[in-house]
Image (cartoon, rainbow, N blue to C red; front, side, top):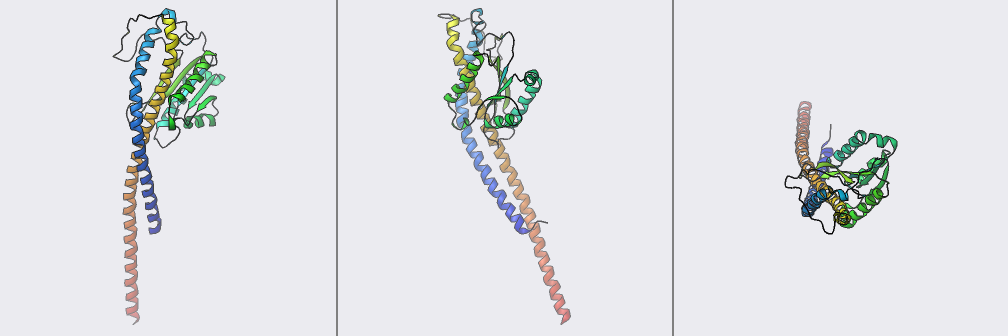
Length: 296
């Protein structure tokens, strides 16, 4: 049975932990507000350039562009896995990694078995997970979420773009968390390269416009595709970071509430043990008094 000293020590430890989780929740909430502002500000441009490119790649004159034309044979695949740099954010990392592993074991199983699946990890958690388990990680980038900037997106974009054009990667797929709400980030899987030729877009507000391209679609796509790729990567990073802060805020809030409940139970247990000790002392005093009275 735990002594009063043990229980007091545990109560003190839980209170200290509660203060830490409460502070982390407040920090995550502040970061979430800034991350949401950046993410929401970038969404309209990202969606518009994606819609424009969706219309443009249906033009036969641009379908031979190296970033649009699908390879006759897909020999190698690059899977970009975007996680956080740190834990303490609930199931944010674990759900994404589980989804990535399921994707590898199902759709990309043949490429994984033949050694033609290249993992590109963004974030320390994913990098450490896949490296420790012997996956073929050809490129890692972590520590960028502490000071997220467009230059980081350009670095990642340059590696992916060069790898695809050089033939190192025949297809590039991104798996990441998209921000839906604070409680539940959504794991999304998107083909980045080659740019897919879609006949429809899920956005209800989008329709296929009949554009007049000047000077011509080929020259326009030469400048538009790099912008599109950079913006998609930047949006993925912003969505992931906002989702991470939302998940961390929720996790720390739950931890704070759990600590509160644990303190209540420990306090009740402390009072019971203290009452039992007091009762025992009283009984010992009474027994001693009775012994003295009998001996006299």
